Image 1: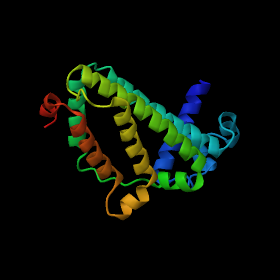
Image 2: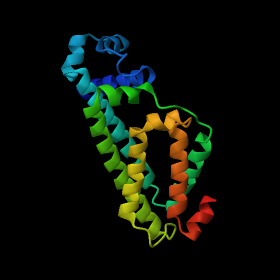
Image 3: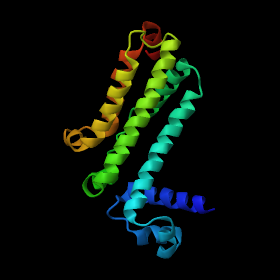
Length: 199
């Protein structure tokens, strides 16, 4: 019950932060949304800073679970098929980076840095596992340096978030950049047989 209540606070606060930005959402606002007292809130979190840190950690765990679910497929062909379906569904998505990230960089740099570190390690780990699986099935180039490739792609994603202001000031948005980078990445890692699936 205690853990469920804590996760509910994290989920509710995360949704509010995403819609409105972190700075504009107070602990009072979160408590009002949940119908709880501030006294109850402080049973679970010492401060808003701690809530932000745990919300970001929960986001990394969510990403890790999604990647783990893909690994259960045990078939790189299905991974490529799911990727293609995802790309088609989101190709016209022009969402912009939310106020949440602006606030993280400016007001919560320590939590943002920790989030980027955890996110980088999670992506590096699972991308390496996907590539190894693909190599075993002959769909990823046999000469590919898996460790370095996984690290480079995770780095691209991390740097894109860190420098999103420059990206958006050029008239682009994070989703468009991510889509293009991922397309180039996938085409670069696949074998001839893998490319036939991707085309």
